Length: 469
Image (cartoon, rainbow, N blue to C red):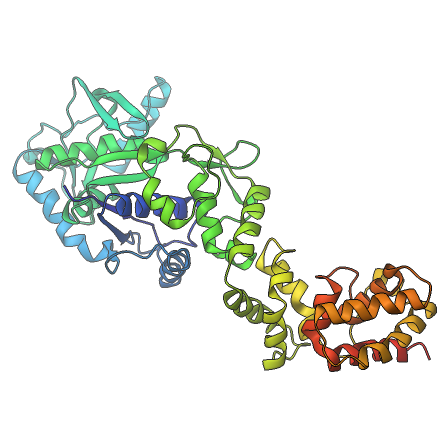
């Protein structure tokens, strides 16, 4: 059997972080077993579905590297096929027309609540003759669910789960206006797409029993279900807006790398020993459903940030430079020319060692693209005393005399200047850092000197010393 999985989001908003994990698990399972991973846009709710949401979902999946193996299938295009199945079940006596009015359905629900039962259709039209149908009431088509016995689903994550058939009512397959219900559409599409494994959130576990009724009625093979626990916030409650960002696009905007987010989502409910850092190749080799836990996982932003820092340090410098330049280009005060890009690229090794997100990385790299005069915060200004500026002014000739401006050369010159003035290295290095970067924190000061080069370094030092006069 060739494994075929699917990710089937509803295009009513952004790609939810929980949905991204579901897509990742489906993608990895298919890759691990040499199968196919498909996308289906469940857009039958045309009032809530939007093209913008479709674009946002596909863009998010593309960013994460979770594109489908084929172009996405749009559920709304299959409506007639869904209705055809409902009509076939009706013709075979496995479904029936129901003429219950909205008022009757309301009475059923109220009675069930009064008796402490879950609201459920009572099957009043299951065996009645259509000649009893009231005039002017368009019927729905309901499936004939078994009334006795029980149903067991062997879930690949939850294990064997059994419900009594008395809990399954005769659900609607086709509405009175001829449109199919979600339950029918999902089953027909999964069958037609050849889906062998349905991997989704455990909030769909109850749906699996209802959907199995349709598979059985049609004589179709039921796919293997795997219902994965939901993601909770740090407080143990279901992840919501109050816990922070929910959409994948927000994590990209916050400066997380896709490989870091995928690694984090993989470990959020799945384990392979004690391995925390799992790259894409390892994930494909190791992932299977027996590693998925039954309990909900708690989202930990600190862990995600630390993991992102690891992937930043491992990332290609050219790629990070492009990401940083893209962000800095939104700063109207900067001119991102070839020189600025060159400096950022040259200093990337020192920059990425100190950052945990691309946002932080861009902020730290900003001084490489800044022009004189630099801006200084209050903390930085406290280091630019008159004495500090005089010391820096004396350093200029030493640096200007260098014929080579490497880290080693500049370090030797700064140390010699500190010794000649009878001060500790920090008394020179700290105000020098401020003069060159506008901040009290930066990569190594001698690295900064080498990256900026002699001309720009002296320009920045002289700009600070000139303000003392």
